[in-house]
Amino acid sequence: MKIVRLILPPVMRLAVVLVALLFAAPVAFAGGALERVTIETATGPIVFDCEVMRTESEREQGLMMRPYMPELRGMLFDFGEIRTVQMWMKDTILPLDMVFIRADGSIARITANAEPFSTRVLSSGEPVLAVLEINGGLAAKYGIKPNAHVTHALFANP
Image 1: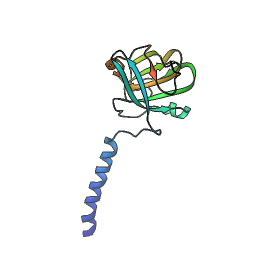
Image 2: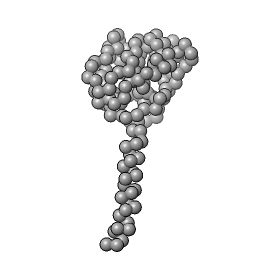
Image 3: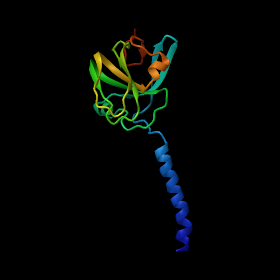
Image 4: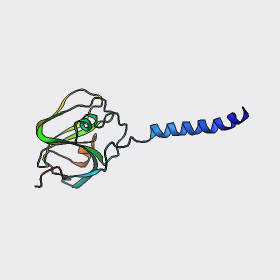
């Protein structure tokens, strides 16, 4: 019994530390390698390292239940076709800016600071090929505006 008391406290301490690290660490990204997405602004290019969601199941999961995303990280949703897109924030913890992007890489519209956990439908307003989600407020902070150009392999060259 004496051995159990000597071993148990360090094991319990280790368990507590591991659980604390698990909840304190940012959630790892779901996909493979991050891909660069560059947005041209009046003050110069802004580069985001992005996960690219290409399948229906990846797009459905999106950023749901993620408690943290680094500032210049994002998620690019590739819809595989040009169409009107509708998004929502159900089960999304972070406020996000949604950047709706046409097939030629130009920004159609931006929905700023989409409300976490909201089921309100956020529409592209016109046919687009993709949506870039970034942390809420970054579009305003970096001067990202409609008609700015987005560079990524997904979009046609200008």
